[in-house]
Image (tube, rainbow, N blue to C red; front, side):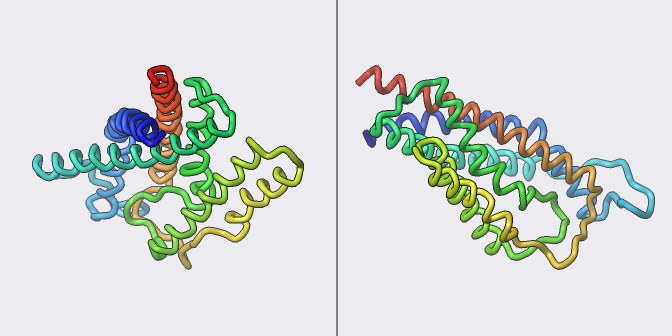
Length: 227
């Protein structure tokens, strides 16, 4: 079982991580680089005349940045895949068949747990905006993800109304309590740029998690066939 989980997770996570990095380069990194112009003062929003230039980054520095992005993306999605495939293994032990098409549903569930639910109250932030302590945000993010994952499990496998009621409470509780927020809002980048960054982050996250779910289901099924 352990070898099956590890093999499926490594293959699915690495492939999904490479796709995630490519989508980051195409859709998210240009927005971040644009926002960094406002953070540095090279472009000015709400006052002064904007200067239509692009970041003057050395080629070597940009290469290092891109290389680290690919590495981090691959490691991140391998980690996500390990969690996803481990849950698939537990579900299969309980009698739930894991297929490629069902893997898609698992991928969407992973997107809800790790992206959509936390982002509902703690959206992705472009450089230069007012923030609170990183530790406080990370604690809230992890608690929200854990509560959402537990809730989705209860909805999927719970066999009574009590489980579903508890699940709804778990989903709502982190947002009713509220995510850590700064005392005041400020930022150098235009709100339109921040909105574009948030929407593209969610879009890329959904696409990659769907792919991760499909690949996890496919490799899991393939490993089952071989054994």
